[in-house]
Amino acid sequence: LEIDPLIFQGQIGRSSLLGFDPFGPQPRSVIKRSDGIKLQVKPIPDTYTGQTWLPASKLNIQEQWSIDPGKLKQGEAVTRTLTVIAEGLSSSQLPSVRSELPDSLKQYPDQPGFEDTNQGETYIGTRQEKMAIIPVEAGEFVLPPIKLPWWNVNTDQMEVAELPERRIQVSAVAAATNNLQTPAI
Image 1 (spheres, one colour):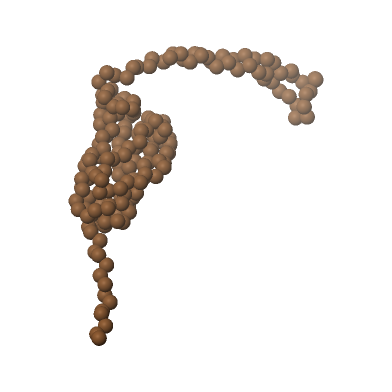
Image 2 (cartoon, rainbow, N blue to C red; image 1 turned 30 degrees about the horizontal axis):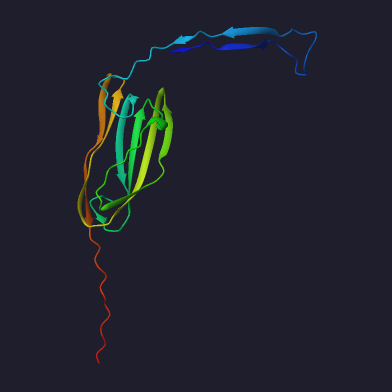
């Protein structure tokens, strides 16, 4: 990849605070040119099996729950937040991460959140996916692991960021009982 030189063309010199001074030093025209840059861009390695090319220094997936996933109740919504954090990539380069859920768990995704920050010379991209999950049945359910292949630019090898499978427990909602007593006749 070749990046052409930058060229600056302008005038330098002193001018009066009141404008042009015909008796003072005259500005002179200059043309400055930077050096061109040649970069060697490596191809995506044949050993990379991911769907999205993610070359980074570090990449991980995290999850948070608004309620302990071991104490869910049938019919009550819980928010699960999945966050991908990558050193060396912008948030817009990070793929969506969603989990396939059993039919007994209805999933309603929100719009993703994106954040880009600098820590010294390190560029960090963060993508956050929030989804409301509503259990429609009681029982124990297994959410499959989430795996995200990425390329470690420090070791020049493929790695996989993984969120392990998650077991959740959903308790049944007690049926409303009729506390009204039948009047005696």
